[in-house]
Length: 78
Figure 1 (cartoon, rainbow, N blue to C red):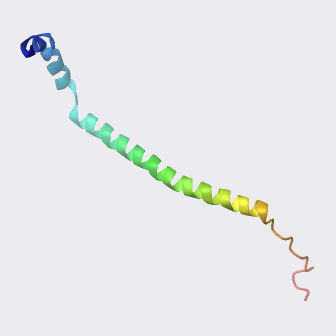
Figure 2 (figure 1 turned 90 degrees about the vertical axis):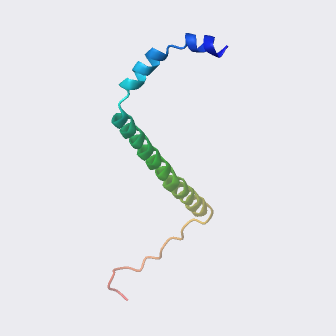
Figure 3 (figure 1 turned 45 degrees about the vertical axis):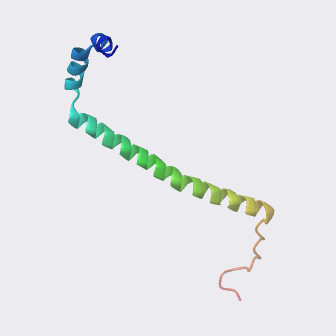
């Protein structure tokens, strides 16, 4: 069974394609992928808590509207 399976697998073509792979380019693409992924994760890790804090603040302001400040007149008059 294994012998017939190896007979059907094009090992020469697979070997030729494997030799065409450029290690440096593949490694650079992997590094770029990891950096972009880390940036996105860090961005969302920052964005989610900030968005939640702003939503809570907006809800607080909706329930407790700011009080109008009293007009004290000109800045130097007391």
